[in-house]
Image (tube, rainbow, N blue to C red; front, side, top):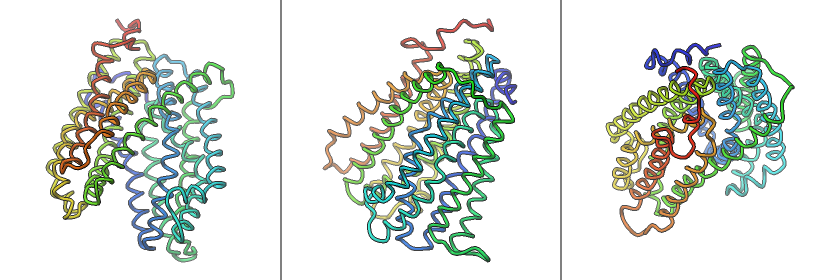
Length: 449
């Protein structure tokens, strides 16, 4: 077990932070990089196959994202259990989360197999695109339980401060996926050329190998149990409710912003897509910081070391903002490169001012992400739910009353997006310093003092 990294965090905050953050970051980057390779392979089959891939991946990833409470909740409970040296409770919650992941994954598989055609049609696919998308969705449906099991295992391992095992799984599984893509899509040697079906099959096989590997790792580090208590079920229900509402609010705002940018015209839609793609990539760096904060603060919170938890939170926010500043500088310096690679010439005039706004809000986004991780670590899910709902209501209202006739409308969308992040960052920080409402960190008796 790697809990020594958490216990000794305050004595070596710089080394400890980056020794946890770097493996988490690379494990997160592995999947989108593989997604780019998948896209490149499928693109060689033609535009219809590529469009079908887009339909299938959006449907599957959006559905799975809604169940991220399995990973987040498991990480919080296991890290707190590690802090109070109560692995019996951690084992119970982890076992419950994995059981639920398997059940939800099975239900998702059945729904995708039964309603795949309808789902593809609702996404606008027709003709041959519909047929290819349906094939992709139905094959990938068999991997839904594997994805949720892997996601949950990652949360458990992060809670144990084992950041290297998820990295190993992510790298090996995604490399296997690339190899299988090459063999099954194009038919190399004895393997038949399966086209887009081969791409789906390659991903599904890789996902199940990763899931089984993760389950074996969790079994080795903490084991499983069937002695689950009603209190564990109730706790997971509350986490699921709060995370569902929070995630749904996040998705709603991002969809509204993208919808408005698209309505502004082709040039605005293209510029917005380029900025959004880079924003999503930079968020991986910030999400890794949030995962790090969740494990560290969860450990000290579980051990009822209030002073240590607050000090760790201070370090986390400091390092997070520094990472955000580095990302801001990289975006500003890389403007010309991104514009050349991702942005049509007709969209450049709209792209530049919006890009600058997106860049300067990176440190603010970093603070929002890290404070999310801190509050996840304390189990303060209801507070995060309320903050995201508030931010979404305020900024969705601003989007709804925007004047679409102005030339600076796309820039205004990114100003509003920045304010959406700012609201989350401000309330996230105020919950810790000075501690608005009833903050969990202020309710502890510091056994370390």
